[in-house]
Length: 258
Ligand SMILES: C[S@@+](CC[C@H](N)C(=O)[O-])C[C@H]1O[C@@H](n2cnc3c(N)ncnc32)[C@H](O)[C@@H]1O
Image 1 (cartoon, rainbow, N blue to C red):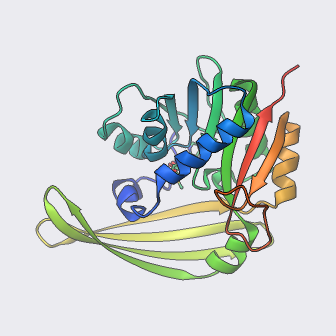
Image 2: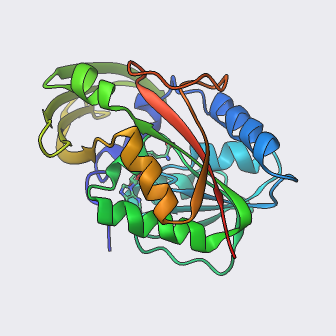
């Protein structure tokens, strides 16, 4: 099993997303733990952990962390960073297996949008419920319908980054074409990466990714089917109420077990 779509980009994922402040994400996840859990969770699963930036941010705050992702390349990047005490697993979020239950599950940076069908959503949410302690917390976010329709739409982007590593600085260009189909809710991302090599040549790699746009109602219904009680949906890290023009929604849900 492998997760296609993150093989080439894995090498530059962290550097292209360097502006994302994972400490703020971890602050907010902890604020949700404080708000909704009777006590601080000991063991946390970071689902679709990618290169492990959120996993490491939470590990540094003293949580025992499991990071699971379907991409061998993203996990290889995660394992190339200091990861003492973090257990990384190559697992598909629709069919993952753990050794036992955890106090909280995080799933960040629109990873839930990579679940392309409601059956996939159900499979993932049902496993999250299965592996959460009773009343354990599920914290995740999604890209909103507004973002798919008005920001991604059929737009193309060109990102140019001057990246610096131990070999010096080099350029990465990322051309990114989106195609959003309102009927299916699927957004296709066609990415081309041009990475400057030490000898000045450029290495090109192409990737195709897909995300699915979900309405608030669809996500809330899927949570309820999985016996995950929705506790709150927020538009920012200040617990603000969601609006129709948000680009991201953050969800908290609690595992109800009989
Ligand atoms: C946008 S990245 C987010 C990574 C990480 N959560 C972060 O905050 O940086 C989405 C991640 O979802 C993973 N992914 C996509 N589909 C998956 C699946 N079916 N099972 C497991 N991981 C998946 C990709 O490999 C990728 O690492």
